[in-house]
Structure formats: structure tokens, C-alpha cells
Length: 504
Image 1 (cartoon, one colour):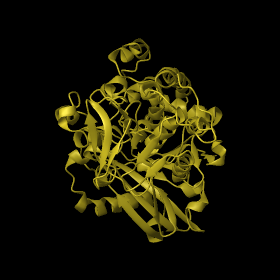
Image 2 (cartoon, helix red, strand yellow):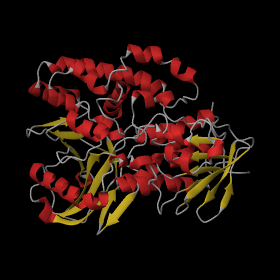
Image 3 (cartoon, helix red, strand yellow):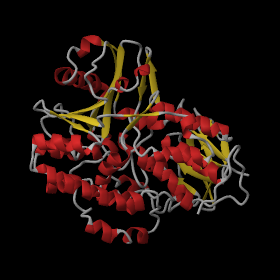
Image 4 (cartoon, helix red, strand yellow):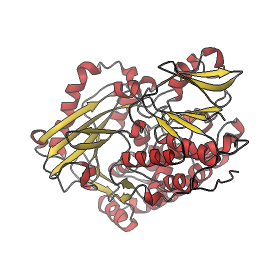
């Protein structure tokens, strides 16, 4: 019985492996790097533990489903702790806003900044909930394989004003510019520009309000380890240091893969958790690609990239929030420079993650670990990061020291930085994009890379680059789509310790 091969052991690939195994398929997961996790891998240095990418879990039920699908109790594998506030936004004028899940605390802060925006926020929250009911509840785990899948939801999307940008929708309800920034930064967490991302992504706001924001005890990598352990228990091998160099296609169907060391593995089907732009142009021979030709892939607009500096310090800053967004002097102008002009500028806005606020075990006693993230243009900018990285890193740390962490640089004991070369190289993304294709109206739902390949039968995609998009909930939902597009095996392979589900 040939297995399904999953390329990539990020959250999408691991979740795909779980769902395929629960259907009764044998599965093998192949990861190019030395550890599972993909964007959610872990760096360890000088006694500090740094999550490489995702810093929180939202919609935790999606993780619970993976363990219960294989007859396990998720509480035996990982623990989530609530994050409060979800985010602290530090305005350039020195004031701040704590984005929380409690209505009373949230509305009181809005009233203190702009009393007339209290009712506007209530209306916006209703808009976010209605958008969630269509864009998430009805669509997030549904395949968009045919144009008719898109057409059936167009009336609802038009009614919701989904053609507006998120910023445009928020501005319709909120007058104060500071509050507009608080309520529109979230698309940046999935690679989108609030001034061009469609307001369908306003659903993120309600998703966080509905299920909260959580941090895994031991870091996000602890959830990755839990999923790997779960898969090993049910007979799924997760092979690291196994980069795939080619997807073999026979008779128009995915028949297996070739590895860098020359190994060939036959497969019943292939699920790719990698960047679809990279996959089509680097792993599939041109003669098998009628739709996703090199020319068409080149027209896909990729998201921005990131510079991320990881550092550990002597002492702590106990007054910090788990997440702080440090707003620069410009908002729309800065985003225009990053997304459209592709210019590297120094008046940055920053996202700082202080996980020891929630879990002190990630740093040695009396010390603290951080990462600070700065959105930057992707590799189409032509920036020479070999010469720019050190200078830009220093600008980031100086900004943090003056705005948030006094005395920072003299207290740093370890640090390192990644830039767009990391995403282009280690994570094999097109143009060094941090989140895959940019979430724009013309690159969402049916217009995004499909979960089921149009060119190669038996080839499927999960992860940030395909429907429904980036972010942990989007990636986990992309794996859920597989249950609707992958056929059940003729003879199911039993799952140890679990009763197989029937998948409609």
C-alpha cells in the first residue's frame, strides 16, 4: 500500500499528515531541514529558547481536532496559557492601547481616546462577526476548486462590502487615526497590507475575540513536538534532512518524489506544505504545468518579508506585555514603501514578542528572551542584505531602547538576526516572501493557489500559500480541506488506539 507523501513538516504538513492518517492512509512526512516546524521551528542559543515564527495560537479547537481525530486527548500533549492583553499597541506619541478580549475594558479605552468611536466600534464588531460567519464559518475549510465555488459566495461578500480594504472598512466606523491603526494592523500578521487587503480579513478580529489568544507552555515549538509525537504513535514517520528535489508525475498524476540524495519514494498522492510558487517552478517539470507556467507564477504578487532579531538579556522588564506593537511616525506611507515602492526605510514599526512574560522557562533564571520583527520589502527590492543586515539590526535595537526597553543594548547577552534571505533559502519561498502570496482581493479564495492542483492529479497543497491563507488558523484549516478533496483508501490502515472516523 503506497503512502501519501507530505512535503514539509510545518503546521500545515503535520496537520495534513494527521488528517490523512485518520482517514486510514499510510503517510510519510519529508522535511528538508534538521527539525520539524517550518516557520514554527525553534532556535536555541546560550540557554535561551526562541520560537522562530508564530508566537500565539488562536482558534485552539483546530489543534484539539487533530488529537481527537486519532483518539487522543490533546491535554496529554500540550498546554495553552491565555495571553492578556492580546497585544499592546504603543503609539508614536507615547500613549498606548491594550487590545483585550473583554468588552468593558476595550470600550473604556476607546472612550478615553475618542468617545464618539464607542458606538462605531460596536458597529464594526458586528461587521467583523458577520464577516466571520461567511468568510470563516462557511468557507475556511471548503475547497475553492471551481469558479462556481466562488460565485456562490459573491452575493454575501458584496453585501458585506468585502471589496473594501480593511482600513477602508474600519475608517467607515472609526474616526480616530490611532484607533484605526489598532484595528487594522492584524492583516500584517498574515502578510497583508491593511490598505489593500480586502475586508473579508476583518474576520481575524472576531476570531481573536471569540476564542482568545493563547501561548503554548514551552513555546510554539512544544506544539510542533506534540504533533510529531502523535504522528509517531500512529506509525507516521517524520523524516528530517530530507529535501525533495522533484515531484514525479506519471500519466498526469503525482506518483512519488525524488530526494536530494537520489532516493525515490513512490506515493499514492503528494501533499505539499511548501510555497506553491516555489513548488510549481522548482519541483514539477514544465511539461506537466499547463496552468501554473513559469510566466503565470511570476505574476503572483508575493507578500512582504521580515527582518527578525532574536536576543536574550540580563535582567527583565516586568512591565512589558507579551506582545507589543511599536508604531512608527508613519502608517500608510510606511506600508506603501514596503509593499509598493519596495524601499527599505528606517522609520520602522516593530512587533516585539516577550514570551517569558508568560513562560519563564524559555530563558535562564533572571533573564529574558525576545524577538523583534520589522516588516521589510521582499527580495524584489534588490536590497543587499549582506551589507545592510547589521546596520538595520542596530536601528531596530536603538528604536526599541529609546521607545520601550531602556538600557537594552548593554544588557543583551546573545543575539542573531534573520532577513529575507532566510525565507528565500531555508524556507524556500518565492522572492523571500514571509507569508506566501499577498492576501489581496485578486489573490484570495478561488483566486489563490488551489488546495487541489489543476495541473497534476493527486497533488494537493496546504499551508500559507494556498486557501484559506497564512496564520496558524488558516494553515490548519487548509489541512482540513483535504478531507473534502482526498479520497478515502480502498482498505483503511487501522490507527492504533483509535476508532477510524468516516469522513463525509
